[in-house]
Length: 168
Image 1 (cartoon, rainbow, N blue to C red):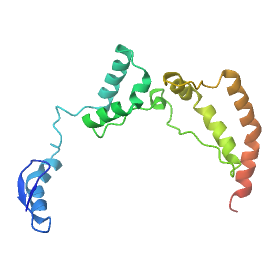
Image 2 (image 1 turned 30 degrees about the vertical axis):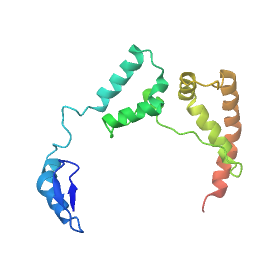
Image 3 (image 1 turned 90 degrees about the horizontal axis):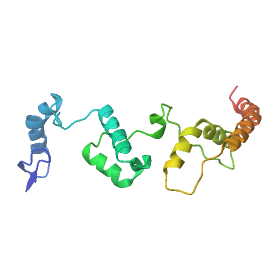
Image 4 (image 1 turned 120 degrees about the vertical axis):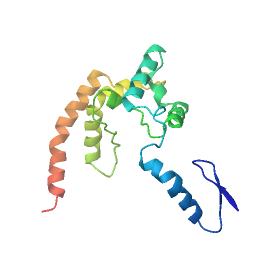
């Protein structure tokens, strides 16, 4: 039985174990990989270069920011460079990447945590909703003011709950 090396396409013999494939890899490919000659350097790009090119494409072609969230675009980027990670809106705005917190009926503090996180990420949420093709409108300034007041009212209860449920 014959098998083909996925790296150099050389045909190798296969007889119920992988010894010949391992020997081939160690003899031909392992030294090349450890020497850093993995992918052709003319085809590898720095993350900064790709990020800048992505921003230029969005601006020059009047693309919506949401293009980076399209499945086809993600597949294209992955095909070009599987190690590249698309920048998030929070990173683009120079903010720490924070995920939304969902309220859970059985956990009292989850309401406080959800409101607090929503208030912390209000700008990225607004930017995301503005660029998406959706009828959902971001909360208005007055609604965020109400959320901030609710956080201030709930904060002592959250702190008390943490203190009372902590180990002594």
